[in-house]
Length: 167
Image 1 (spheres, helix red, strand yellow):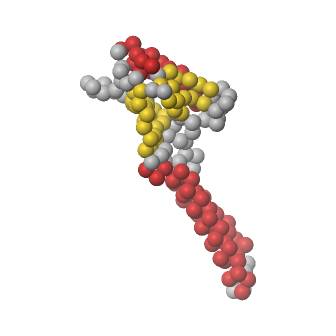
Image 2 (cartoon, rainbow, N blue to C red):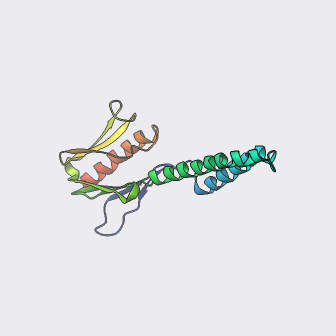
Image 3 (cartoon, rainbow, N blue to C red):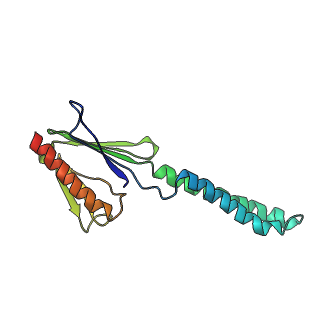
């Protein structure tokens, strides 16, 4: 699962702590294998052209294709550097989103007035989960899969109910 409930036992610590991040289908090790495999497969047709002028005409395009593959996979990694942290205390809660390029967004509200909502339709993705409170509605876990968001919704509702009952 691309989210994890963290243990919180220390005094003064939040009653619930949740970390969410996007799933990476291609780990860094796989990236190395893809680049190596792409380079090797690109060499096969070029081997027949060794010693000819045509090789020098095709080589820049082959290297350009490898460079484009490298660039766009790296861009995908940079765009996926997202971490959402939800901290729930009995009297307040905070949601901090660390986005690509170091961009940080924060939302705070009184736990008692916060509601967790799941929008079956009308959102940017099916089963869109939001937290509503402090006159604002914020998304949480929009990058999760369609099957993971309903489970997150239920777990958030339970954590919120537990925190409200403590306070």
